[in-house]
Structures are given as structure tokens and as C-alpha cells.
Length: 75
Length: 264
Image (tube, rainbow over all chains, first blue to last red):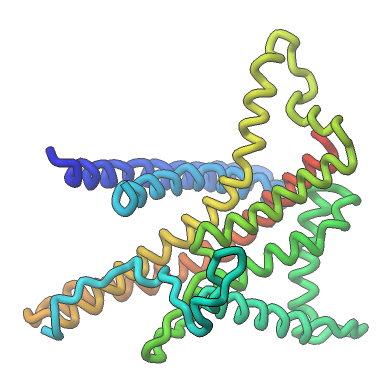
């Protein structure tokens, strides 16, 4: 396999990481919603933590995208 | 078919083009021409200045505009009070400036300037150099405040309370690593979120345009129309991401300032 084809396949494989991170983001918000519906009074005070978790999960998905971009345009 | 088979280049929107100035404008060997990035920074600054100037009236009964400005400052004020405590009030100007600049820059990149031929919007936060400087503001503040307030005691940040003695060789290393990676994660998150969203929008726009130009008559209906509908949804999602990224940047900055002020 020549190097360019391997790069493209690698970039495509990096999309798996982005997809799994999408599941992670969904998990963050669904867990928050479950907790919030059980105790709505406490929901607003936890919004900051919701977004911290969201940011952490999202960063990992974005890193997968960075790897794809590096493979396509830089490497 | 219109001209050459138009493969639309989704990376073209990130190109930095000099608008005016010459190659001789140099500072320490680096060219400082006025580029489209500079232009949009000036536009963001102008929009921000207009927004603030219109609302800083200190009326007893605030009008709509003053309410909008007070809502924005109050939002950052609440965030810092909740995360840092009463000492957080000192950092409201810094975090507010970062938040509003990023928010305005993100939104300015979404503005439909493209309807004027030859003009296209430029998202200044889609460049790692810009977001890295913003992240350095946040990280530098943490370092300066931490060492200013606590001196060398600031290094106790790397040894959380209740660390068992037999883990003392491992925990500081992990804490140091997670501390040093902060500016990178801040810069990278904003830069990639903006870049990825804009590439996706341009790729979808390419579907619409190329579908309309196709020879077969069924292509516009089958390809262009659904892609256009999808684009409307993606655009709304992008506007949400613009706001969320600015919020996350401000939130993480306030958390890091909390570490520097209160030494968890």
C-alpha cells in the first residue's frame, strides 16, 4: 500500500474517534438530564460541572479530528 | 455544467490574505501587513465597543440595551463568584474581555458577508495562533496570580490534600502534566471546534452548489435540496457551538483562576 492511501485510511479511521466522542457527549447530557429530572432543584447549580464534563469529552473527539487533519494536510 | 468541474475547496476560507500594506512593514523580521484576520479583529473590536458603549449608561431604570450589557457582565460576575468566591470579582474584567471577544469573533465568522461578491467572512478564532495567545492570557494570569499570592507555596497545587505518602512519587507528576496541558487544551478546543464546523458547512455548501450545476435534472432535487435543509440545521448548531465554546473558555479560565487563588 502506498503512503498516501495509508494516510487517507488513517484519516478515515480517526473518524471513529469522533463518533465515539459523540456518544460520550450524549452520555454526559443524558446523565445530567436524568439527575436533573430526579432533583430539579439541584439542577441549576450543577450546570458548570455539566459543561466541564462536556468540554473534556468534546476535546477528545476534537483531537481525533486534529489527527485526521494532520494526516491529510501535514503528514 | 458551469465551467470546470467545481471542486469546492473547504480550506480556502481559512486563508490569510494581505489587504493593504507592503512587504516592508516588518517588526524583527516578521511581516506585519494588514490582513483579513486583522480586519476582522478590528470589526470584532468595533462591534464590542459599540455594544458596550450603547449600554454603559448607568440609568436607574435600565433600557433594553443596558439590560443586555448588564446581563452579559452579570453572567460572568455570577460565574466567577460561584467558582472562585468573593475574591473572584477582581478577575471579572479579564474573563469578560476573553468571553466577549471570543463570542463576537465566533459570531463574526458566521455572518453572511458572502452575499457581497468577492467578500467572505473570516473566523479569527479558527487559527491556532490566535487561540493560543488567548489561552496564554488565561494561563499566564494563573501563573502570575498563583506565584504572586502564594509564592513558592503555589507548588502545593501539585500535591492534593489527602495524598497517601506512598503515592507521592506519582501524583505530582500527573498533576504537573494536567497543569501544563491546560493552555494547549484551551487553545486546541476553540481552534478545532471552529475549524471543524466551518469545514463541514463549506462541504455541505459544495454539495448544494455542485448539485445545482449538475447536468442530470434529478440531482438538484435529490442532492441539493436535502443538503440545503441539512445546512440550515448545521448552521443553527454552529451558532450554538460558537456560544458554547466561548462559555467553556470563560468557565475553564475561571476554574483555573480558582486553583491559583484558593490552591485546592
